[in-house]
Image 1 (cartoon, helix red, strand yellow):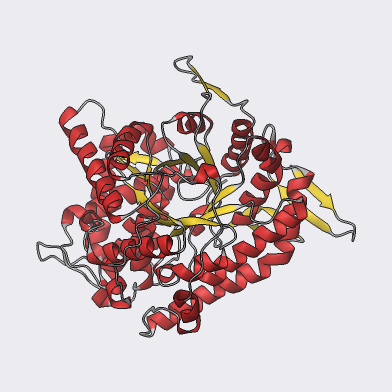
Image 2: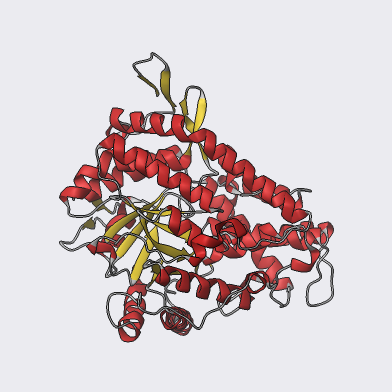
Length: 536
């Protein structure tokens, strides 16, 4: 497939070079591609500049400068201002379900007893061309209520119920390119590609349904990146003839730098903002990533990093206080547990963890929470319905909360275990293998793993190796030990998944990539960047 869209000035604006996907013409419309070209030409230089600012800030941290609240924006933090009111279908967000834009999953998620569904083109979506195009087609069909799916194994057909959840879409982060689409010879931003196609093709149908174009914004690291999104929103709304403020966005606070700029991020997006979300797994990854070169900031096993850990608790409480002061929703994070079939005791233990997690969130003042499986909706709903009087808790201002920079930067204590080392290897390797095969949301050992949790796995291994950490049995984590353990864990995976899959699948490529990233002298900012080069 090689499609070009000409402009009045005669420039070859859009070049889509990829094999044809059935019905792709329904989403690669002239209207969508024109919007994408306009947004790329207007904003891609600034996007690249902001990415370079990330690298500059990291270099300063590597030299010893610590993140802090910005003195130049103190006035924004001190002044009284509030975001614009949110639409009626975003007032109550007590339970949100998330997942990639796969056809059957979309139907089940929209039918689930939840308030909203976040269709995810980012951490739970492997961004193959087929997945991206099919995802846009599926969302268009769902909005127009013409989506259906027949299971080839059972013959069961899935359709939408009369009442469905409110749809929110998460485009990719600013750092990710879309290598199959070029404007004037330059790769476009994955974020702008996902956003432009969805908005241009669906805003009219969404309005007819009495809803609107709602988004989750991932991986922001500063209020300047939020400002860029706000300008993108305004330009897109103006071009399409949509009233400004029609777009609503919830920002995931899932990077350590963004935690110091929550007020400023909401301020930049105040006409379009709907709330902030605690993206807990990416936040842990970001903490490791930010202090990757500091030997005094080595984190213990992932399993020990619960939301009661002081640096995570401080971040949660600051987010809730900030949101409610500004009239914005404060959304909780994802419990990774999923139902365990065939083991009643294990399933009950997992569901107890989910209930405990949601109880902690609602008591802290969150207005809603995330789940990854429809079966968890009754648990989350019951907790929030019991402890939250009304559609949200915006009236809970948390005046008792006072969070300092030191609170956000406190390094947690805990053990690094041989079991934690091995689990990071097994989970990271299996996730990358699935991602390279086109699956971005993977149940592994009864937890739903996505790119964020896989990032923790490889980041911890890199950190432990670089700083010569020791496991609790006193043994150093050396390159030799890593190589030997990797070999042993590949053998274990072989026994778990079967030899046929190991031979026919992508495990050799996944193992090479995973090993290279863990043993690299320099830290790769995102595993999805080198992995994307291997993806079709």
